[in-house]
Image 1 (cartoon, rainbow, N blue to C red):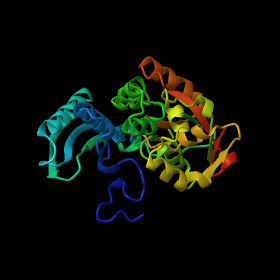
Image 2: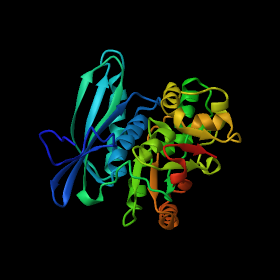
Image 3: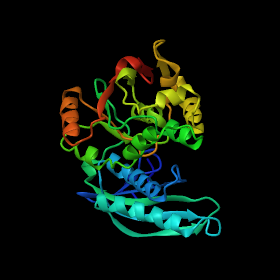
Image 4: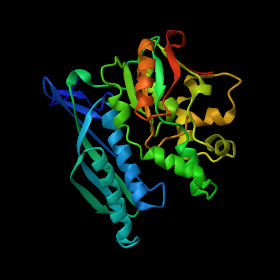
Length: 316
């Protein structure tokens, strides 16, 4: 692979991975990622916390330790009160502090639409980088957060979401994947990614690309937010869900017993979703025990990797 002028670029644009990784020394590599989006909730501090948590997640998905970040802001100066931006930055700073990450600066522009996120730098040993590819036959898939944030925020925008359902997804979207990533230490993780805009199926598909294996998902084991299936059945589906399905639907084999709302939800684009991890069956119980003891109670085994489904994802 041509790595251009920098031969120490271990993970770059050719990999379609969660972040870029540059080797600094034989024992140290730099992880770089950037993410931002428009508000999905009205409260600016909550939005700031969610956006920061989401931005940090890619570093954890690569097996790294986030160390510093820079704010990325677009704000309509003459249209919205500046207190909204101040609240957003405050919320983001709160999450950086919780993650033990330093704010190094940032950049802002006057923009017709408000957006916020961060550029994050992290560190990892070159031999301990986790990629989003490499799942192996016999692996167990573990998912750490429930599905349904896209459907529920769509219901929220339509004024149809119950407050209890919104509160639960906010708690989850503000939960750092730092602890979940730390639980992977010492285990033989074959692939890892965070479930975000491409939905569960999109990110699972990346794990088996250019390989001779497939994935079988036990839909009965999927962690799902309260009301998500109900709202999906009502047709409250975000546009990104339809795009995700159009791109990956040809890979699916779906049992007749899987109801339509669940078939929709596996394509739901997530904001600040959980980690999706592929590791040997004999280590999956140890990982789940660690996660549950760490307070990650939604974590569970949702399926397996199998050579019987080469290039396919089966929903059972």
